[in-house]
Length: 417
Image (tube, rainbow, N blue to C red; front, side, top):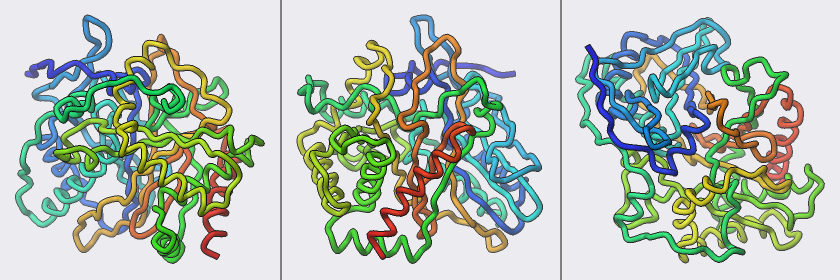
């Protein structure tokens, strides 16, 4: 017997992801013995500790969707044999059934384990904390230890968390307002096309993975020059995109999400909010070198946070949704940076070899879908001391998108050569 309870309606910052039905995947490659029984027990423990992951979405009577808890039903782990680089295999996803999943894809000694979370109820920073908890529970399960964890309340939307901290919506100066298309994305899955073979279940990606030595050199460069890794990568992306698109630098509009959890008072726990994100926008004012642009990007972010402009952006999402999602401008570029992936616990007979991201969407055919700027969603992460740049895209764009990633990497490698 199952019982269902409406928890609350989705806020606008959450609803936009229900419209496109997007799940984000956080995958680790593993080698060694993977105990599927322990993994299943660990996932069940995580679902008990974070009940929103076992919930589902239902259309509400007044439009939009609501989070609905379902007592007695828990998502199962999906295990398939196949190419571990296809992180979710052919698994189907339905936000009306569950808001999370775990997929295991095996091929001999190669295995990928992917935690998927619906973007309406968790952003990247939230989900990476859950990923760490999943592997902590797995390690305890293998060792025969207790899997009981503190039960976390359902997370709150950014609108409510900002209001509690006295941050209210104000009119933004038009020149400083982030473009509406930018506010809608963190990240957007590539739009399906008629000539694709079900891209939703087999998303393609292009990638550059830096070595530990290269990543350490970029960190050292940032320390010497007073810029962040995000600033360095952002500058490389902006310069490359202008060249690849044949646009002047001043036509590039670069936007990226900013984690607000540590940028409000009091601070917010990793899993206490769903999408606690602001958006920073940078428009170059002229041709500059990579390090000069990195400094300019970092300074622009500092000013945006100091003035509160970045904090305002999620509060203007209802205006953007009411206006409809316009096609992105030719110079629009959006990049998501998850930062450092938390250290993951593992038993001695299991080793983590890699970290990847993926996107899966189950869009509503009755809702117009946004077109991703530049043809693909770009995600940065650092795992085990190695920086990774991934772009998710339609299969037909693979060659174009790999050239894009290679151009980003070339500028960064030139900076440390």
